[in-house]
Each structure stands twice: as C-alpha cells, then as structure tokens.
Length: 493
Image (cartoon, rainbow, N blue to C red; front, side, top):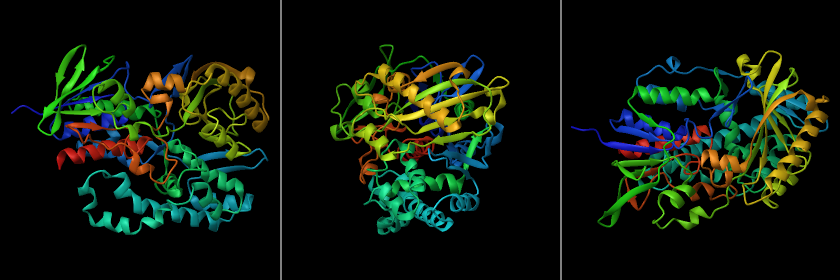
C-alpha cells in the first residue's frame, strides 16, 4: 500500500521538524525551499574567515530538539551535541553597573543583592511567579492547539482554566516587574524578555514573564558547532528518514478543490506543474501564505491586519583583538528603556541610544574567528519595515552603536573592524519570507495575543496546516518546534 504524501513548504526549523514527525508516522515527505539552504532565520554567514550564526543565538529548551531524534529511535548525540552554559548573559549599564547572570540562580540573585538595591528574595519570588505562569500555560497555550475543542477536554486544561488569573494577563510586563523589584535596573533586565518575541514590555501582558523560566529553570545552552548545527543535524535526520529536500524551489501556489462544504488540499504548484499531496504544511509567514500561495482564497483579515512584531538591525563584524570583558551573550542597556520602545512602537524609528546585544560565539567555538580575532553579532531592536528610509537610519544607527560600545567598554573599536555584513528588515523579509521583516509574526502587545495568532490548521481547507513563528504558539526556536508538534498530534488523532 503506498504511503500518504505530504509536502512541506519551507525548510525552516518548524518545517523540518514537521517533516520529521510525518516521516516517522509513515508519510512520504518532500520539502520545497526557495533558498539554496535550509534554516530560514536560523542560518549562518561566512565572511573572510569568520563564521556567524545569522539569526537566533540563544538555545533554550533543547529537549524539544532531542525529542525529534528520540521519536525516530535515534541517539541525539550521534547527530548533535550541545553544552550547558555556566553564564547566561553579561549586562552593562550606563552608570557603570555590570552584572553577570550566572546559570546558578542563587549566585545571580546574590550578585544582584550585592550590587543593586534589589534583594535575592525579590529575584526568587519573581522566578517563582515565572514558574507558576509556565505551569498554567504550558499544556494549554504551548503544547496544544487553542483552536480545537478537544484541546480543552483534558483535566490539566481545565485546571489551567481555573488558574487563569495566575498568568498575570491584565497588567503589563513593566508594571508587574516594577511590583517585584525595587531597583529600576533590575526591572529593565527582566523587561528585556518581551523582546524574545518581538514585543513591547510597556504594552505586552505580564504573562510574558514566563520566558525567564525557560532560561533559569531549564538552562541556556550552546551547540558545540554553533546554532546552525541544529539545522544541519535535523536536516540529516530528516534525510535519514527518507525526507526529500528541494532547494531553489519556490512554490507558486497551494492547490485545493471543493469537497462538499469544505475544500480539500490537493498539493502545490511548482514550475507550473501540480505536485500532488494529501497533506500540505506551510512554514512560510502566514501573511505571505495567503497573499502569494492562496491568491483566490478569502484571507482572514483580522489575523493579517494585526500589529506586527519588531524587527532587527544586525551588524556581523569581524573584530581584530579579543575582549575578555565580554562573554558569549552581552547586553548594553539603553539609559531610557521606555523611550527606546516608544521610538520603535509609536514613531516606527530607531532610538538614538538603543539597547545593544552582542553575541560572540568564538568565545566558545574557537574556529568561528581567526586567531586573535572575534566574531561579533551586534543587534538592536527596530520597527518592522513600513517604508522608512533604512539606508539613512542604518547609517545613523551604526554611529550610535559604535559610540555606545566605545563608551561602555572604554575602548575604540572602529579601527578594529576587519569586515562587515548587515541584515535589516528589508533583507530579513527577502531572505526569510517574514512580512515587513518582523521576526515573530504578530506582536504580543495585548493580553489576547495568544488567542489571536493563526491556528496550525486551516478551518476551510482540509489537509492544510501551518507551522513556524507566525502562527500558534509563536516565534523562537522552542515555540516553532512546538508548532510542528501540534501538527503531528493533530494528524495522528
């Protein structure tokens, strides 16, 4: 008996994970990817002897990657190895305060107590609340569809519904954090977690305080060969399971036909020919899915007109010399954090004193930079692309970024830049298919955002599914992998 056929559009991490799950369930699976490589946002850049992870740089919840290998009865370590980080991040403030977030939360809490007006007790109380939010939301909001009645027919779901008030959905993240911490600099530190899904802590619900639990309970990790090794390892697993990859293969349309009261997916159109399939899973941003691949279909306007998440401006810099004061992950905070978010969300521009994130994988992976050099991934949060003059904004932002780095590190780096590549909202959109360059689809700037994300299935086309950061449960590696898990569960039940 022939295997049922499934086609996946897009070889991002969620697309590959979906393909793996379907192959394990007995589907014949093919992936069509418009780029010449797999990974989507999780890509890499090689530049004059420097290697950079192009997109996501923090690895949390590795169990969701390991799970894919275990489902296939494979040993994850035969494909992929990672190490826990003793140090999560280094934080730098304009007033001279420097904090090192040790993976041991007791040590980090004591450092905060020693150096700031906040206490270790405040930190532990905050993280206990973070754990509670995770316990309430994990099974309901993260690992199951919010859009199917059967998801609510579980005892753990009902328990979570009764505990809804504990997820802190009715005040902003910033307000909640002000109630936890005396020192405004520690409020700022934990407000930062809103940026993990491209949102504004002064608007987003305090439910987003679940995110620190991922780092401080489950831990932060680094793949031994860099973040892109997650993709190469999953691609190898998929191929070992018989999944066929097509690169430089841009899908033209999703094909469906009327089937009673509902439509039924038939496959895709590629090079003007129909490739038939019983199941189609789309890993493309859902906005472009409807606009480009379902041009005759009535798009759900309420979903497609929501506020988009923020984007990023990234400078990949080959730097001569080494900087022991910097670690793998580093944050140089803006002095006025709310003004920075107002610039992004109200004025759709780049703040003159942005918070700067610097990721340097060569601190751990020596081959990522030539001897005596470092590979700096320098990123700031910026608005999604709405036609701004990006060339002018980038030029001004680079000046401000260099000035800020020089000021805080008390070193001049301009003459130490060996090579440079830039990624901005325009190129993020063109390379990854993310509408307006928004990194996480829609923002989470209101308490109903989780319910407003597009479901992982089409309610009007049987056999059509959606995965990735633009749909439920959201953006980032763990949630993208969970979108694939939800689809896998749906196709089995």
